[in-house]
Length: 488
Ligand SMILES: Cc1cc2nc3c(=O)[nH]c(=O)nc-3n(C[C@H](O)[C@H](O)[C@H](O)COP(=O)(O)OP(=O)(O)OC[C@H]3O[C@@H](n4cnc5c(N)ncnc54)[C@H](O)[C@@H]3O)c2cc1C
Image (cartoon, rainbow, N blue to C red):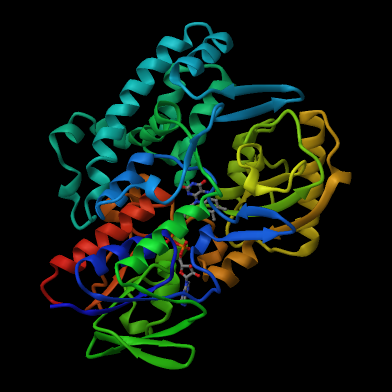
């Protein structure tokens, strides 16, 4: 029988879930606290510049295709996808960088120049990563994390060692050159933990990177959010923005609705795509599944300090995606995970969407996004933000051999306090809970509440994990669970 379902939040996971639930014939209402949809993937527009506030790397296009195919449509029906060539550039010193091309053949040539013999090793590494990709992304991640047995398949049994070894060990077994090691460890940073704490099985991220490539949706990642919101509405979903849910209401341990903007809204089922920890605080403590201690012990993905900068000229010596790995990664990682503090020498990432997409900046100008990963929960003040802006802009000028400071028309920033204020994020984490071995699949917080009937969860803190493609999958998994659950 069709149900009235309230979905909290309008990030990728909530929008995906809402689409599936509406397709199943339910009456679906999204309640989003912010003015616009998209959650961490919202958009900032200023003085003719357009920035993605959160995600900028479009990886795993097959996951997006699979999502839209479930609704008999395609990504191209909604947005244009551009394959980036080169995919990205990594700086290791002044005028010293490695360019990652748009095909494995080109990348192998670059590897061979860096470390003779490494092209053949890279081919083997990527072949193995592709096998992991086929097992994980085509199958395993579409399992709801209800039981450890989900991970037991003929394919995974032959790869059991890959769950217990780490990506750091796997990479170092084959490659000695520290620059190649850094490049091969980069993709798993999207999963939120150190490479030395991420299972080797996650090398499927390397296949996503080198084997499939990096894409840019025209008008930015936000065009994917717009596509999903349009699809959701066409399926009958009603989107209510500026609806701040302050309570999940229950009777006899069963959901009755939510309180939003001081008004009660009735629902048969509530599904939250807001951060899991926050969602549970909307319940009395006796109905929460996880204690504060539980969350304290978890490995969270980093927070970030971000700058959105309008430059009054076109920049040189950078690519659409440019990484600055000219300082010691181990030290920065330690300052994120082991001894949380503002980094002494931060690695950083920069994106210049206007190099590919003229809609991102007025003619002759450049839109720049700068990101420094940080430990969640750090003190966040305007002075610290400015101090770190100065650090990275000085380095940027030196490494890329150009002056840019005087061409800054404006800069906006986003950091720990904004993640908390805008998204109710636990300690201001940027992208959820990391995919370590002990935080994989059935070991992650449940999609369905064990204490409150008809309460469900989706998003980057539950299965399968952080990132846009996993968020789409998470929405599908929860919707399937709702569709097949007998207690509704
Ligand atoms: C800076 C940054 C860079 C990233 N880069 C990439 C990348 O390049 N590629 C990639 O694949 N992934 C990237 N990610 C990760 C990716 O963006 C996230 O994993 C994904 O967007 C999370 O979606 P979600 O639906 O789980 O959560 P969210 O997008 O956080 O959605 C949760 C929603 O719930 C709303 N909400 C919270 N509390 C309430 C309440 N009480 N009432 C109503 N609404 C509420 C929030 O406003 C929000 O809209 C990045 C993330 C960040 C932050």
